[in-house]
Amino acid sequence: MMKKGLISSIQRYSTKDGPGLRTTVFLMGCNLRCAWCANPENLVMKPRVFYFKERCKQCGLCVKHAENQSITLADVGVSIDRKKCTNITDMIDLCPYDAYEQIGMEMTPEELAQKLLRDQEFYHVGAGGVTFSGGEATVQAEFIYETAKILKEAGIHVCLDTAGLVREETLVHLLENIDMVLYDIKAIDDNIHKSCTGVSNKKILRNAEIIVENNVDLKVRLVIIPDYNDDFEDMKKRIDFICTLGSSVKEVNILEYHKYGVGKYDKLGEEYPIKENLVMKESIIDKLLVYGKSKNLKISIGG
Image 1 (tube, rainbow, N blue to C red):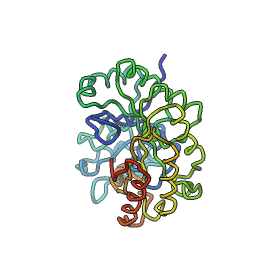
Image 2 (image 1 turned 30 degrees about the vertical axis):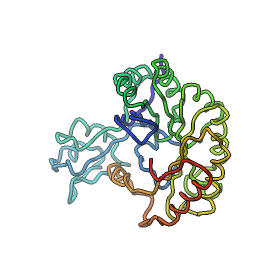
Image 3 (image 1 turned 180 degrees about the vertical axis):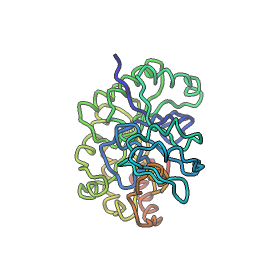
Image 4 (image 1 turned 90 degrees about the vertical axis):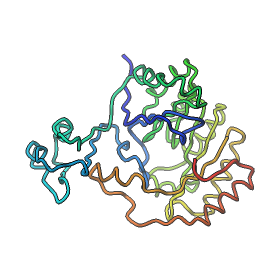
């Protein structure tokens, strides 16, 4: 019996997750805890429930049926005590206004691959393919391996979007069916990395080298968060490290801080971890861009 994967969403017509026009598969589960995470629904390896207060008509059905009096009417929509609400999934079918939505669907590699292969012609015409993202996609490494194997046999270009916190042997096995890796490097200084993500970067930096040693293309992404990992000397060291990876690095993208994920925290009944109003110092980004170009890297903002 094939191992099932847990997927939060499948995004078609993506232009940001690898070359060409692609479909991005977002998998659930993550072994980092980045303060700025834009996909909090994917942090844990279990289905989640979004609540859309703007859809709620305050009909009271969920209030009536919630266990432990855990849902109550509020000024707008309802208030949910998620620690007490042991039957929140019941509200998905109960609510007549679709205010509750489950995030997380189980699929076998065969089921997912067949769904993705429906757009096979679209991938070829758009010079694209399929990208596995997350969360941290490598948490479900064997599921990706089996799905990617089917896609590769059909001639589909496959990308892996990862922060690189994975066992070496698992990564090498996974790379057998991967054409390009989109790789996040959040800091060189280990203390900065720990303060931002909760984990060390030693394995992450080594795994970048392992990808190169296995002759897989790299697209490196530098996420820059004001007051978290925007120390310019550390950013320069990230560029210097990327230069050691050689010609496998096809592109470097500087990704600036955004708050697109804030609404997701609200839908999960959680607080966004970054309380302060962070302001990006554009002059630092410009300096980093100049420094990267001085090292003959193909580097740009965004992408």
